[in-house]
Image (cartoon, rainbow, N blue to C red; front, side):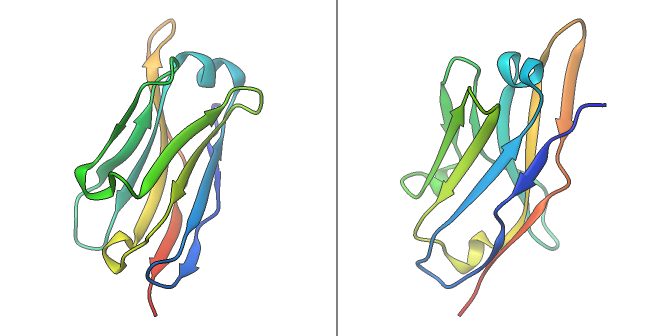
Amino acid sequence: QVQLVESGGGLVQPGGSLRLSCATSRIIFSIGTMGWYRQAPGKQRELVASITSGGSTDYADSVKGRFTISRDNAKNTVYLEMNSLKPEDTAVYYCNAKGWGIARFDYWGQGTQVTVSS
């Protein structure tokens, strides 16, 4: 059973920073596109940022210039560095891995709460 293990959420004041981490298996990490999604109360889950196995990144317009996604291939871990946090960034953040092996795969982490509040 593939696992995505997330960490790093919490409570932070507006303007502050947090770093989320997501670790998974070597094979999934090496062939998959890793992404971070978020879901705020009453809203649909949305893509925040993604990074391919080759290192290409994509960001939601709302986080461009503030968030950075990166990957550590030695640790099979993807990170989301979040700076200049705003109250509207408050949500449950989910790690995702998708791609093709023998068949298409699409795995989710358990989610980690990020709350931006004074």
